[in-house]
Image (cartoon, rainbow, N blue to C red; front, side, top):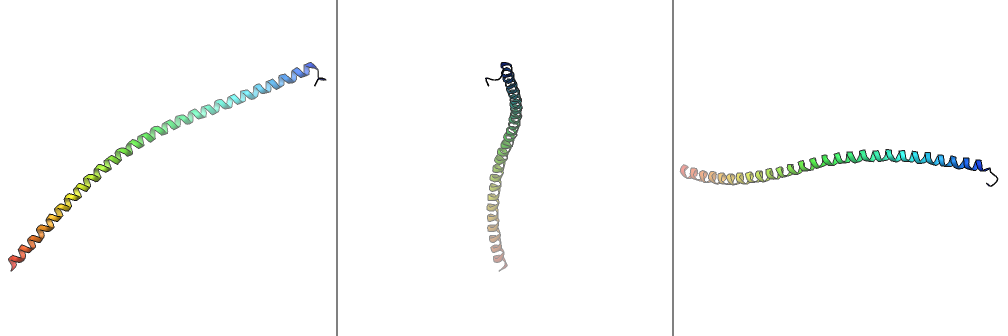
Length: 103
């Protein structure tokens, strides 16, 4: 390399520097694009999170509503069973009275 003239060495070093600058510039541009994509993804994830929060609160409300309806239905069925039992008892007693009266 000592056989090379100084101008050629300087010229090669400048070319290397220019190529490094170009690569750095391209790399920075790619990094900016990647950052922009990540920002867009973050925004999308935030929107998805908001939607999931709405869905979650709706499901929790629906679950509470279903639990209340289930308790109400259970109470109604219990009352109906009690009424059915009383009705069966009355029908049995009425049947016995009718049999006595028929004799």
